[in-house]
Length: 208
Ligand SMILES: Cc1cc2nc3c(=O)[nH]c(=O)nc-3n(C[C@H](O)[C@H](O)[C@H](O)COP(=O)(O)O)c2cc1C
Image (cartoon, rainbow, N blue to C red):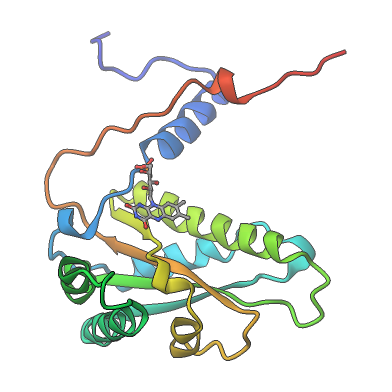
């Protein structure tokens, strides 16, 4: 058997290896590192459908997505620039940030605005609705990674403004925009390395 052959693992170990590979290979790859290769409609549909299978307390399914593609990305870029200009006091305004809002959405074939729709009777705590949306975004990112696609969650402070929320068609002031998910294909062949600190430092065991 050559060194790179798949070892003869038992079924459970194989499942674990598949889960490890999917979860640990997921990386944030920014629009500047994406190619101009388009996203196939069926891939996008599969990615969004998997978002819909996120866990949700009380089955509220609070995730709402607005998909910007083709010329729609220019509309988003124009609005982000306007919003940034309107929100920033003159002494805090940065030309490089303004320029980036105008160019970044065009570097990625798809930009998905991430929304949270607040349950009308507010029975579920707001934090749990935000958590459910984050789970949906993780499903998006994992599915994209499984396909070898690039993805990146961006959360510039202006995404949390009322103006952003309303522009995205969420008039209820309890709703929220939670950022943007950029989706495309990596430019290069190389997949970025990830890194994490020691998990043992983040877990406390209580066994007696
Ligand atoms: C809720 C959320 C918001 C994020 N917003 C930003 C952001 O605004 N800018 C940024 O550079 N990365 C952002 N990220 C991505 C992180 O930088 C990235 O996940 C982290 O560097 C770890 O890299 P990895 O995703 O490749 O493991 C965000 C991630 C999450 C979960």
